[in-house]
Length: 135
Image (cartoon, rainbow, N blue to C red; front, side, top):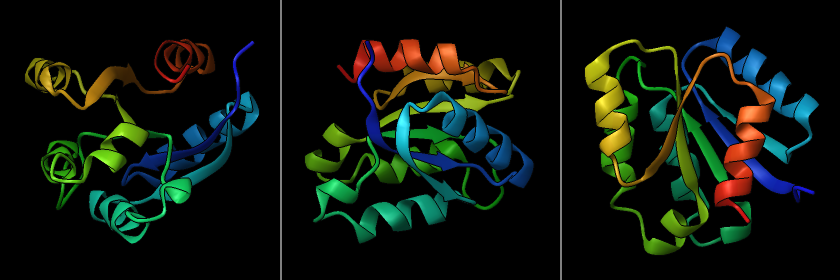
């Protein structure tokens, strides 16, 4: 039986995708709380705000690649500068509809990205990923 994790952060500029994926997560009951961030900047700001309060950090981050102003890769460039306590607590998966082979390869090569998931999110796929990494 999969244990329940506390917090997941969704980082996506698309309001419809945020609503759909947060609903899927809610129905799956895999997390107690979903943190919605409408931009990479908002996601990083949340992490910075709670940098000294590990209990408020998300256990898991689902990050979109293609966002205006700051894309998912720019988010990851700043994320890598966070202290180990943050990076150890917050696992990241890319959640994207990209078909760009370059983006896919870049995401798979990033040491902080555990998996690239395709939109829409499938609860079974997320649960399998959680079982593998958050045990």
